Length: 232
Image (cartoon, rainbow, N blue to C red):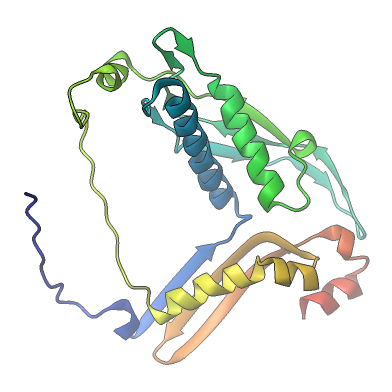
């Protein structure tokens, strides 16, 4: 039987404090791209492990780096001179029981599928280069996953998690704003709006202000006047 201890935090909730600052990095922000793709890499690896071995093998795929590419800007549409580079890092099991898993192919396909689904104007075959730096896990870690000791695998490390709920009103509004700006309905009305959006909410007392950083898609902006008209 698990022992659960509950204590009361003697501090005002964020929504009841005088000052609150909330920021959300949207769908097309590099940090969000990296986190989302590596999460999808893990999902696809788990499926491959289950299909081939009937269990999830050792992997940690939460490290990646998105290296900026190069473009030539122009009203009405520029061009990509150098594709961005997505580097996969961390560790994953490449096989067991005499079978091998093509981790590099799985990671690259997961990334390409994510870009196609979420970035309207990114062609992963042309605009993204993937570099696999996912290494095999250490022998000690891999061995843990090979043991058949019962229902649960033995732990090899310590880990702690932190969470909170519910959202404050400011947090909920910032979250919903980013979702709204990156929604299909908004993009249909404003195709010039890019996915790289960041929303910050600043509350002082009952006064709440939002700052939205939003990249524009050049092919829908044909002049400086067009830019400011669409912006405002």
